[in-house]
Image (cartoon, rainbow, N blue to C red; front, top):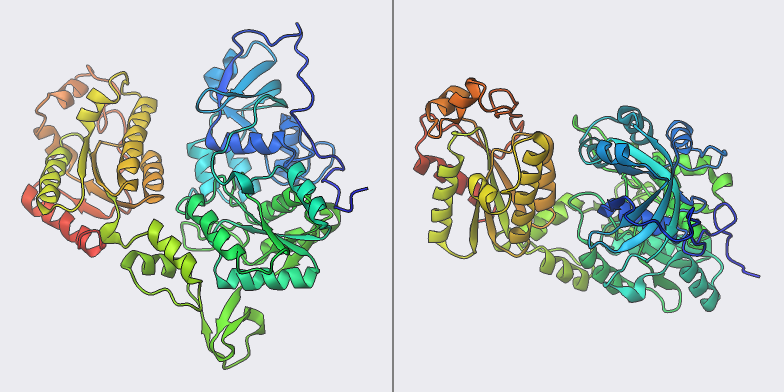
Length: 568
């Protein structure tokens, strides 16, 4: 008889166990196929291995509507987060059977899905209800509006092949495996620590105290699926966790990695995290200040209150069945040479604190990271991944109308950076990329977005490997530019240069006669004529080349790069 807390709903789902019952016995040939996105793959893995118990597949429309409106499944079970498979309108219209295949990016069959529900959601309603906002500054709202397809599918899953991970395999456990490991160790009371950041001294002090309060063993359970754009990559974080693990008493603490795609949904996300940790066998769960918070909205206000997550978990404590260990922020107090919760600081005591922003500044500028903040081996890991800016790769992204002067400036910048030396430099000009990388694409909005995303991907690889990428596409749509920035800033620097030359000047420079053809109706969907250019609202640099010579314009770019620390 297990002494561990039972799974949420009483049964740990194993969707690999029961084979699908196809109408004719064997799987039909040429089933429709969905290639799973990174988020989809995280969701599918946790559905198949029971991490999302009691779910047995993607939600049907009935479950989805109830979850959005009341945080409950159609049968009344508490569940805070929509788990759905989004597909294009064309794919939804093409479905003529109840079965589809789910494959990873390499084409490996991960699962069969028996489709029971297909619908077009109200995304504005979902955003407001689940995330409390329609502001695209919230990463999940941005994902919902700009990266999620028009239709949702729901239905049962039947696992075929487990998603394969080559990294940190000794620290990856399914819920059943982790429960078995707890049993082997004789653990029955386990407190889980959720994190998406490296662990520093404050986190160790917090988890020490939580384990003492709960009289429980400690599970460090970091998310290694998708987190907030701009977060430290999971490879670096796991190496930091391994260093931190050596600071805990032996036999009391273990590390297990969670392949979750976070939504940064604050209070709802905290309830979701509690359910997941219960499925993994944990009896207690730490909920700190600003749990799963995405930060501030477009007006500079916090999306959620600092303790909203604790309040919602407390409200549903009895149903969740896992006990919350609430914590306030931990701060370093000079007079005590140690950490304590911020609400326990006495008047007159000196508090020291380094925010995430300040830590990134110190890494960027090569400044000291004090020993009271983190351990030297963790600081060294971060320095290796995030060298000072003059050693980092970066992307300069020119955007503007056709004829604005982007290619001229991009070529001039290429020459200047090559002249200076120090880094390999690559130019990704819009016309050249279309010739060699996107020759099959047309000029529809979908194809323009795809072309810019391809440029962004190549630029991110150059940047990640310490080089300089200079991009010069038109890139007319703000959402695609934002996605490109997020992709590149995850691995290095990004500088957006808006070449703001007015339309009439661009038309007067019309060497290819494209504007004239667009005005005559011979070219449809031409940017600036019958298709909009969404001007950047806050570019790093804005250059109007109407009366500005290329040499002067490039000097402004170089001075900006120097001011940002990219040029020594």
